[in-house]
Each structure stands twice: as structure tokens, then as C-alpha cells.
Image: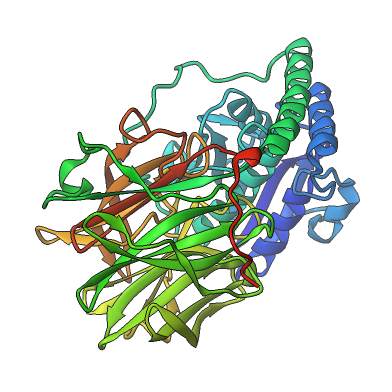
Length: 503
């Protein structure tokens, strides 16, 4: 197949070069470039905002938005290109008789200015590839850097590339999962005027100063774990916060606990958590036994490695307890076995390597084991591209799903805890990161899962409120009649209590 990439010759970015390089290695694909001036480019005032954000947030100058000379695309340009079989239109102006055209849009409009306008309007852009009005692929693009236009723009460019590659390989989904959508204005967003962008830039600088002051006064981010007795009805049943609210696992302010994973083993509920020590800037895995009245003592370290650990996915199998903690800082997904529960963890296998995979979650379904994780594919956000693997045994070997990424959706891709089976249906906790990372918790029903693909329907979205204070809610797990969630908290530095050193 000969593919032509239609782009604006007056605004060549590192994104275009990266996309061309990834397309060029696909089998049976020959790539060329149609680079001509186009409408809909980002105005100079927005470029000035990018420069300011680069300075005040310390962003790298060589990200995907970096401007490149047209000569950077020389390997893919031809003087008299043969007719293309497919045109990928990034500008919205390609009209080629007798040739298939894929038009890339953001919230229904083409061009990178449309993407930036959605970002500046505070939207969660829906990216679509359309051919003659038919949707070829779509995804909800996301970022962990809401409020920083340049970082968000680059994250979403990276995931745009993922969506295009998935469409080219035939793995992209044409319809996003059903999802309770927030209300958005019908009119397409527009990039604000130069004056309004100037005001935005001033506010961005002021926010950064406030953030610096805040971090001098508070440990941030700071999470907290909530727990309760289910009395036979958990959140999968209630689909709402319990009227009794939640009790909080206490911390001393110098550390926080997050990603609660309980397990009922030998008659005792033990809770495993991410234990983040603020002064070290990294987390270990700690554990604490739980009784009906709450924690028996405080979480104590059980797994400490040179890199950051979180999301301690624990499960029992073959009479032993196993753990798959998140170790994306090490670019691996590793399996550990407890030799002296709740400690004595020894690594049994590396399930995946050379990959930035977040919140790996395992489930046995349909006679196979499945591993769910969001992958930072070619850069971009950590939370919007869901990949699957399957294996005959949880130890492996793990085979990537032929349609990875099976979902591009900042609202329902990232795992948020163990999957459970209810009334013959597989239910999956998911993170809804549209407003910000870990802002809300969704419960999705898996409608289809096999080697042909995965389909889910998000049936419930839970947010913080009067019964769970804070700005976040992003993990859900239960064991032995005890249910756990987590979310954000405020931890003033001057109220910290000293705890003995770990070393």
C-alpha cells in the first residue's frame, strides 16, 4: 500500500517525523508526504504560550511539538509521487478523486488548531479517523498534565499516532465504549484571541508560583486509603458511596498510602499498599493486618526495591500468594511470590520487559489468563491506551493481543483494581481521568473478551463527595468483607510526626 501523509508544510513538528518513522516500518506500507501550506495552523500567540510553559514548568524543548525544518521529512518526500492508495489527511483539505482519504479530526474539526482549541477549552477531545463519513477509529485523548497546554498537546499528539497506527494495522476500534458523558457545548471550540491567551499565560505563571508555595507548605501529592465493612453489599452492588461513609487508614504526614489491595489468606485479611515516603520521592510496598475494627498496627515494609513501586496486585493461587506490583519505573512487569507471608517476596518471573505499563491487573477468563495494563506507547499519557496480553498460566508466557491498543480512552482505559464476577458477568474497576489523573472511579461491564477483541460498557462513575472527601477516587478492592478505596488528602509539612527510618 502506498500511503500519503497530508500535512502543513509551514508547521512541521517532531510528531510528524515520529509518525512517518512508525508508519514506514509497517509491512507492505510505502509512505510519502504531501507537504503544502494549509489553513488551521496554530497562531503565533499560542506558540508564545508554549514557550512560556516550557520555561515555567521545565518542559523539554525537544518534545513532539518541536518545530522542525521541512528538510527533516526529505526521506519521505518525492518530486513526482505515484498515486497513493490512501491519503491520511491531517489538515482537513484533501480531496483526491478515486483515492481513499482518512480525515483526522478532534471533536469534529480537523487540524492541530482544533486539538489545541479543545485543550484550551478544558475538553476531553475525541479523536476520530473518518472515511467518507464512516468512523474508522476513535479514542478519547488524555493527559496527566491538565492545565499545561503544551504538555497536554504533546501527550495527545502521541496518542494520535497510536490511533493512526492501530487503524493502519486493522486493530483500531470504530466505536468508543458506552460512557456517561459530561455535558459539553455544541459549538466547536476556538483558540482564544491573542489578548485572552496573554491573560491565560499570566494566570499560568501565577498558578505556578502558587504551586511552588503550596509545595513548600504541604507534601503533595498526598493520598489516603478509606475502608469499611461491606455487610454483604459492596460498591459493585451499591453503585454509590455507602451512607455510613468511609474510615481512613491513618498516616503520619511524612508518607502516604495508596493503591489498597487486601487479600484474605489463612483466615486473616491483610492489606497491601503503595507506601510513598515524601523525603525519598519514591514508594515501597507495605502491609498491615486488618480486623473487624480496623488495622492491627501500621503498614510495615514488605518489598523495597531501588525504583518506585505501586499498585500491589496480590492474589492467591496454588496455595501460595503472588504479587504483580507496578514497576513501570523499571520498564518491567514482574511476578513475585511470598516465602514468609506477608513478606519474603522473591521474584519468580519477568512477565513483560522493556515497557512502561501501568497498573497491571490479571484475571482468569474463558480458559486463559488475561493481563490488562495501560501503556505509554511512544510517549503521551500513562492512562489512556489499554493493552492486553493472554497466557495459559499466570506465570506466562504472555502473548500481546493482536489488536493492541484495544482501547484509547482516558475515561475508562486504566485499571483501578481487581476484576470481579457477578451474575456471570465480569466487572472491571476503571479510572476516569478526564478531569484529572485518578479523579473518578468507573465500574465497567466486560461485554466481550477474547483474541478477537475486548468490549466494555461503563455502567457507573463514582466521584468524591460528602461521603468521601478530597479531589480523587481511583482504586477499589475488597476481601473478607472489608472494602477499600483511595483518594487525595492534604498533608501540611509542619504537622508531620516522626517515624523511625527505614534504613
